[in-house]
Length: 135
Image 1 (tube, rainbow, N blue to C red):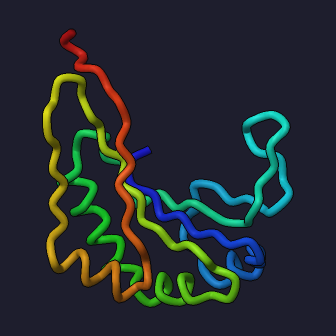
Image 2 (cartoon, helix red, strand yellow):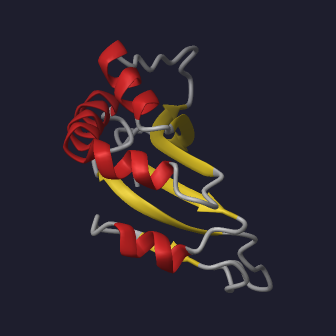
């Protein structure tokens, strides 16, 4: 997983939302359904859409692919984020962090930020501990 669009809400009618668009889904869930973790249940309904399948260490490619995705799907994404019951519309970038690195930077161009804001979507960067393959 690298860049996902995550849409969710406690009172979200996921079936109605899914009928609004035909964007390919990574997965969808309904409130009360069992989660992968045994004994846990979803507290909301929602969906994930894969926006970029670039590797965790390819943030530039993730942003380029997300920019293209937003440009191609802007009208439907704005409808999705404004759909009744949607509480969270978040574009989540998965980024690798490596042991021994003192700092890490992720740059988001103004054009990209404007596209995200116009669609009513929030940004999130999730950091994942990784090891160098050479070690």
